[in-house]
Image (cartoon, rainbow, N blue to C red; front, side, top):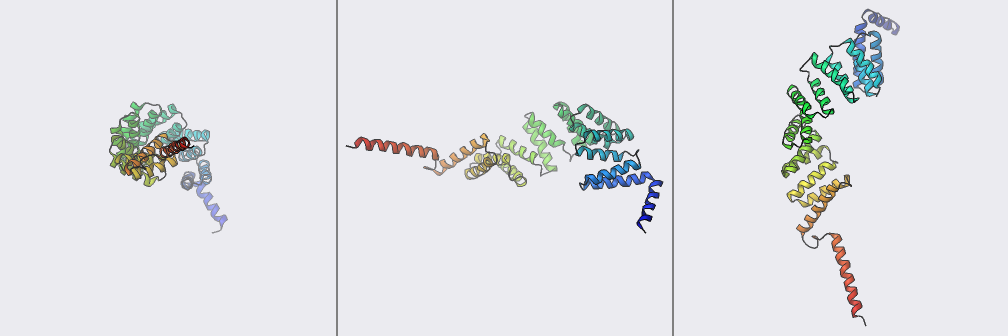
Length: 307
């Protein structure tokens, strides 16, 4: 079939069913977006809107792309059009809510979140966003029950991680550790959860368990000063001074202005010298000062006995 004939057939199909043609362009736009071809995706979505201005889907995905491109005004206009065309679309409202949170417009975000929950009271993503809004408002008491509800609705979601961080902020290490360990059961690669669990174990004095958690964390993030510092202090507490010195030195190389790491390294070096015995038990600076004093004293004695 010649290209001109094919184009004519396509035009006939499009004219006969613009909704189907618009849906095809919507699918193409979504695919191109996942392939990071934002220009191609926008072009396809623009065609979808032109083919069927009453179809909500293209506006939603065009809004998401515009938001990604920092076009807040364009994203807002497309989201508004989408929810006007499909007021019962909870996904559109969830996406709009998330962007409004990112823009700092918490009242408008809450309105979209409530609308999504009115459509589906057990919509886990909307419950999570409701908790996030409370957290942004520093209403921890309001955020906690919402995160707990999200955890029940979506056990493999992010609520346990969020709860763990809240309990850490409140100084409740036991509950924080319990929530973060549940988070790690879902996602063993979560750095923030694991390094916080390790820090809690270190604070409790459970040094061997802390070492295990820090080591796993460093497998995923080898150049992490926080994990290296904690691991070095755990080694120091266990009396493994060689490993403590080496680990803390690596931490200090990554974070040279960290006084806590520098102090721990000094204690580890002194402990190592004391274990090895004199003269290694005496810090090099002290040895040098002693040698200088001895040399000055010897010089004075020589002068005193000279004729």
